Image (tube, rainbow, N blue to C red; front, side, top):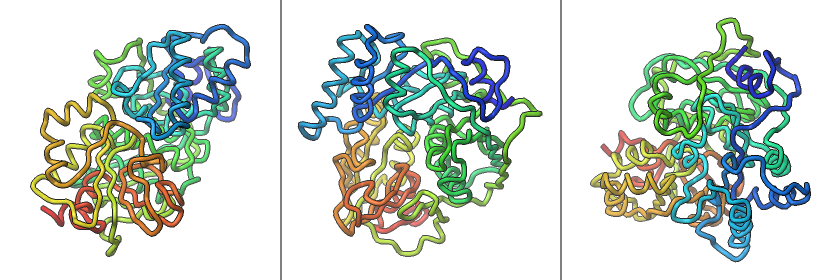
Length: 418
């Protein structure tokens, strides 16, 4: 079996599962946010059960419109707050302690290798970087899982992506996944488990792996996953709150398709509007003037991302026509960035540093685009109207390209500002 099939079989209480099979499986953690959890809570209350299946296995993270931008978002967050109080949920995260959910949960040790995690958020696939099966579900499925501690799903076919070669300067996980989506398209992995392997993955940091698995959904994937190894062990030891288990695919495991890439000459990638599949190498971008840069999100709001941006921005100034917004992923990341002097670099360059929040990524707040404006963002989606006005444009990149673009006022690479 593949690593995905092994994890699903274990959680379904079966010796073996096959692609296409419908299973009931126990869950290790269920996740909701301030957009999706209120719907789940209302459905949970309709079920008529008195309590959740396990209060230690539910996480509520109101990260999308917080700090609350208006009355509606405040009321959404209050639904989570009241539910967490009523059921005495320890993993409810209030403003000041909350981070962007997919940065926060791995950091807090709530997800680990071998887990089965579902969340009412499409980017729940992020945790595959730890060697877990994690996927997004609807709010009604979340309600059922909060009550029963299990979910049902179809075992996905697996696609294998082999990345061989040594990555060049300023090229990382974000570029690998943008290149992959550009190759196979936004529906190229529809309801498939995307398994990432090869020497380039083995050399990738945990932050880079999390960025990569985060965007499996942008290829239509049911999940993304990387087999745990020494880098994984170094991350989870002393951090994970529950026992974990390393799984790996068998040598004779069957894949629907295998893709192989030599990444030694891969350039930083930029995805043009209005789909993540519109990726092209930095050398093929041309002259694209911009109005805003956003560095952060559940894709690239981690320490490695902030360090990369600060390395490019140090001693430089943001272009007079550009707004630079920095969104650290969690309070812990913010504190570490402050201690390392990164905030000083950002502010002296002319950037604005925010409290952890999804903010502008989904057109929420703190960086909405007007008609005709262009933004380079380290986020994961650039659909029409994603960050504001339907006539605005979002270009996806890694943090180094975003930082260089903020300096030059056009999409640019870090080599142009060194």
